[in-house]
Structure formats: C-alpha cells, structure tokens
Length: 265
Image (tube, rainbow, N blue to C red; front, side, top):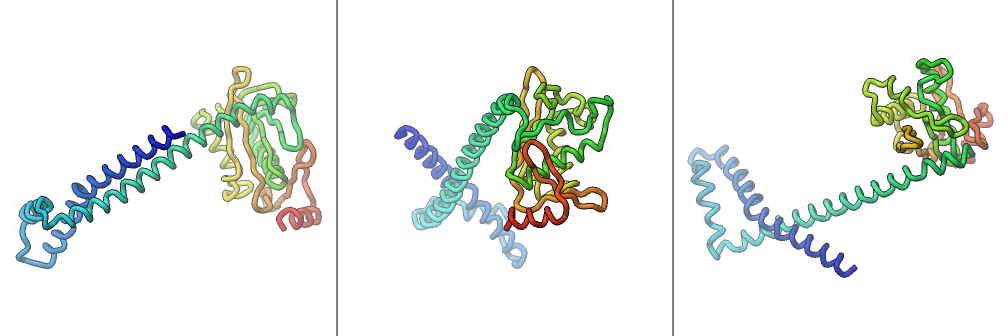
C-alpha cells in the first residue's frame, strides 16, 4: 500500500513538473503569438512576428521577469496535474470496466446451466428462423418483447444463441444476415431493435457481452430495470409486456396502468 501511494505520488509529481515545463515553453509562447496577432491587427507599427517573439521570449532569462516564469509554470503545473488526474481516473475506469466485463462473461455458462427463470430467457436467434432455415424479421419483435418484459420488471438476462434447453447453437446464422458479420454489428443490431421498438433512451439500460460456450459464440444481453414504462411499438398499437415467472406476458390497458402506477410511482 505504501509503495503504491509512493508510486502514485511520484507519477503526479512528474505530471506537475512536466506541466510546469509546458507552461513556460509552450503556453507562454502560444500566448505571445496571440498578443502579437492582436497588435498586428490594430497597429501599423507593430514589429514583425520574429522580432516580437525573439524579443519577448528572451525576457524570461532575466531575474526581473522571474515572476512571469513562475506564473506560467504554475499555470502549466495546474494543467499537468489536471491531466494526470484525468488520465489516472480514465485508466482506473477502463480497468474496472474490463474486470466487470470479464466477470459477466464468466457468468454466461453458469446462467445457461441454471436454465430459464424469472430473470433468464433463452432465444435461438435474433432474425434467423432455425425451423424454416431463413431470415424472419418477425423474430426481432420477439426479442424486443422479451427485453420490454425485463425492462418493466426487475431486469434480467437474455441469452441468445441457445435453444430452450440451453444447448448452444451459436450466432453464425444471425451474423451471416448482417452487412458486417461480426459481434460488434450484432450488438448494434440489438441496440437498433430497442431504439425502433422501445425507444432509444432505453439503450443505455442494456449491455451485451459474448462468450464461447462449447466452441460456439453466445450473446448475453444484460437488461437493467427501465426508469419508465417500456411500450412496444407494433404498428399503430402500443403493447405492454412484463416478465412473469419464466415467460413474458402482455398486460391489457387496465392491467398495464395499474402495474405502471405501482412500479414507477
């Protein structure tokens, strides 16, 4: 712990010193350029750029102008420390995100083994009909309905690429339907489904991770409870679904109103 604190202090000291040098040798000259540009615009007798810069830059070597050096050094040091703090926070956040993602990926096989439940649903694909061996866009509505059910309940996990028994089928058929057959495009497709059917403001409440299960790619959509009622757009209709047991159930208007009133009151 002491060594870690010492290392962090040394790093911040380096940022401070580097920032101070940047203040004197970068920020100061840049500021002089701005000053010369202002003078040249409003004065016909202004010195040339090189005359102005060479004359002013040498002043920092004289003791009577030491206060200028100190001022720019402090300014640069502040910038350096701020940059150091931002960089450290960014790196720590990236490490934490990577660690969390790895933990979520490691959960996928266990979640599949436990089977479907109130918080877990299996789907074979997003748009590939495994029974008819063709693209079926209607399956996207099924995905949206399931996600809506989790949004309106307490969240959950939608595992895609496995059948109802938890046998891995993979994502190859779905990927073959995309312009770019990769996992990033697959994740964007899921976000597009949510945007079109439920509202783009709900996209931040889903997160997709991928894992190899029995040598097959499987996707797990982690769905958090929505901050508002998620209505599924279906033509001119607006449908309301909620997770009930290990299935997704549609509520009628009266049921939906009563449920929403208690759920988001």
